[in-house]
Length: 231
Image 1 (cartoon, rainbow, N blue to C red):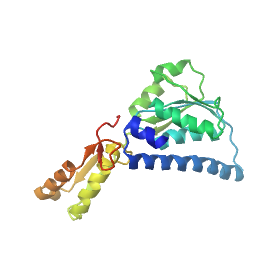
Image 2: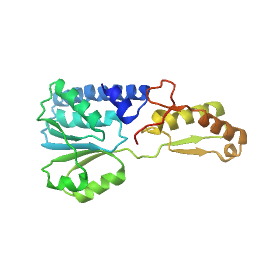
Image 3: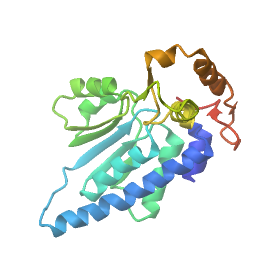
Image 4: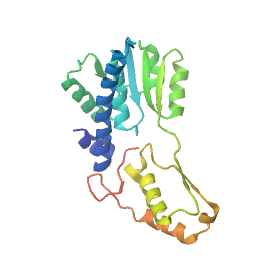
């Protein structure tokens, strides 16, 4: 269900969607088991109350799920605002079917999170998205504890002059365009040694490799870049 929604609603390629679901499952298993370990070591904790979990559009599925699980296992009620309604509904449905009470996890939709949260009685916000948007929410809700997962970091790849040029091109392309470029580990900045930057054959091969990528549907197994990715 999740893979299907990621492909149809978000525009993820099958392999990227499968990876995201696997990562989400890891969080579902890891957080509760970690809490057991903490309790066995003598650490106790009480829930804060009502936690609002929200994200921006290209936040990975695993981050959405991790925010919900983290709040639930620490005895909080969760108000979840997904960036994609269909995907969010499936996520909540899976939690409910797994035994989470509906009153403990509810799906909501606010048009303006920053302003509308002011009138809600909340005890915390788990936010996944850009630092800029996060700062806007914090400014408008200065008394609300915010637990951010910032997703707009810059990932730099450095290519030295003595690198294996064929491998350098392969890894650059893979890192830059995996999941159509919408991945937290995607290369966003390429730093090239000055001497390498003057190697016209290397630059031509890099451009040619990029142009050779196949742009198509998320349902086409041969697609490298999804043409209808919802950013």
